[in-house]
Length: 102
Length: 226
Image 1 (cartoon, rainbow over the protein chains, first blue to last red):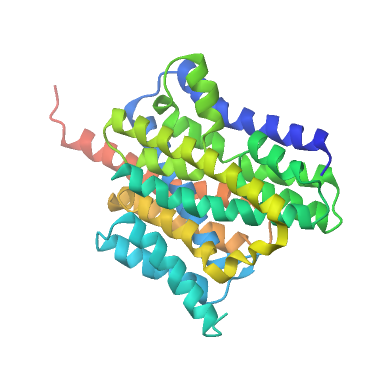
Image 2 (image 1 turned 30 degrees about the horizontal axis):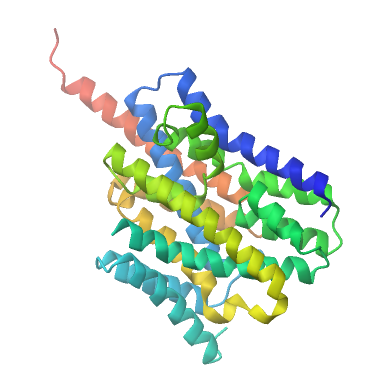
């Protein structure tokens, strides 16, 4: 990965990042549009959760990963502290792998 | 409370960063290259992908394009939470660089604008520090780190994001849009380059827009004639 390409990727990524805050400055969005933008961010994050949970290199990720995330999700829904959610998800997945579950 | 939550995510990022540093050096890059990438790009997914593409014989140009597709989701992120960064130019420039999945999720999770700003900056700054510290450690210590999959770290990231998005999913419209979006992303993942399925998930907003229109129409019907 030559340095020039790293810099191009860095500049492109920064352009995507700053475009949103700058655009919001130029145009005043109606409340309905603001609501839609928040929903869009949630949709993107949830799609990340779904793909990072169920797929790995474009294939099914195996059972250990989704079961771990599901355990985390259930305790989060049950209002467990955030730290517990993250640690329990990792421990469950690691434990299942230790037991030979892929 | 916030600090504890942020620390949990930041520690995970440090270990993930260490594995990135180790993998990058293992693929033949000099020790400082993964650190330069992490400081300048600061997007874990794109960094892993770029190094992976080049290591498996792909061209650096392909790696750049793949990384840009993956990172294009930051545009809608910025539209959603652009007000959180602050007004000054410095806050906008630095704040934009700290825009990552986790900091966006932390900000969206807070209703009060002041708390959202605190959450965004606390998460962005600590992850920047911990991610880069991890990458440096990994690049120097190299392969001694071991496989992060064995620690179940690949489950920590989606679980953290899921916990942060749960409150927003209480809203029926948002939940339907997110559900449909996730289905679209999962269905297209086997066929498309990484990142594109995530963007296509925005198609789930169709549900949201339809519902909003319907609600608007019902409002109009309910209104008495002037």
